[in-house]
Length: 204
Image (cartoon, rainbow, N blue to C red):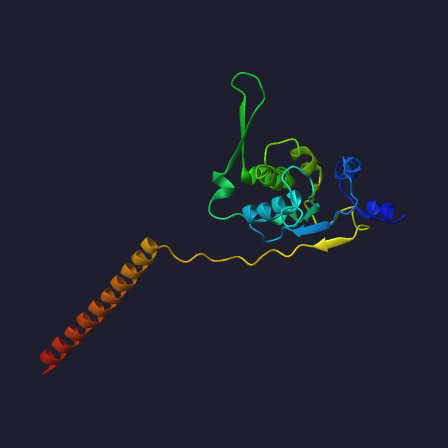
């Protein structure tokens, strides 16, 4: 009954959201919820790939699929740094001669933001036979609604972002710019002082 109630409140594509769930052995797995709102795409995908492979468990083995279920919400509010919205391009080929298609990240976010996170996570996973099983454990939703409200969900706390110190070359450039600005200010003040002295001499 709880599952049916959660499914009725979900307004998205229920068939797509529950696809392949029966093929997963859910016994002993945790349901981790990732809130993508305001998160950087690459940093979020790296955390999801770690959990979905089970690398955060002491029982991790590369030949076993011990990862937890990952539910990602608010995929439409994910962020990127720099100019990736216009510069990052997805390519695919239809198979016909000359039919190389491309789509920018901005257009993909407008079309289907869930595929942006899915591609980022899948490209961080090893290319082996466990990849399809791990893909089934990843459930991404554009909004905050999902049909898994009856499951024992655990919100995932993203680690604090470590701000990297400024590189030596950039630090030296910043120091030079600050010194140049100070010298220009001092030179302007000296010119104003000379003009005032000249005016006082003329008045005298």
